[in-house]
Image (cartoon, rainbow, N blue to C red; front, side):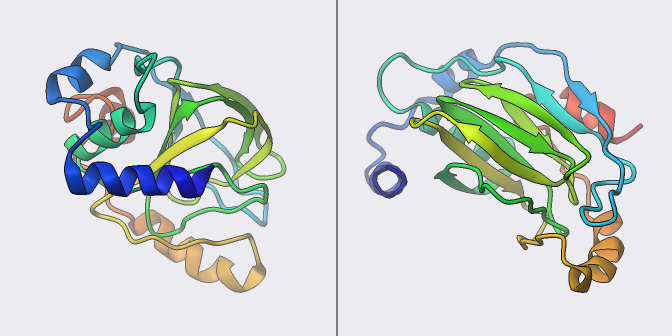
Length: 200
């Protein structure tokens, strides 16, 4: 399924067909409260010492037909979050020490543990968005067969993948606090709840 989704994305990028208009993307966004959670360093997964994990429930209205992933891609891109991908969520704990990450649930549902082994499991559904500050552990515990996730990153970061090994830890603890704040919330733009929460 994910190979097909990648091909679909490439086709839309090259031809422009299937991409939602700016107006459609704008109208798809629903005002939602930012549900904030802080996760502690568990000795393996560092999490973020200052920035909260953000969960927006049912933040984006997805089309009944067409390509729901394209709505997330265009929304994130409009707000400066790029290098997007379509896939699921890895079933092992991992984190990014040099970038923040946004995940939009385009189809299906999943139980995902954020914050490492001592973190918390969130039930995510289509139209939900979660934003992971650098260092936040994430791992898919279970998912529907049709799960489709769109991920993206702010321009200020650099992608890496850490799995909690001791060898990564020293470098990660130094790089996580240095990751720059994004200029815009990936869903709500320059004045979004993410920006307010992360600048406190």
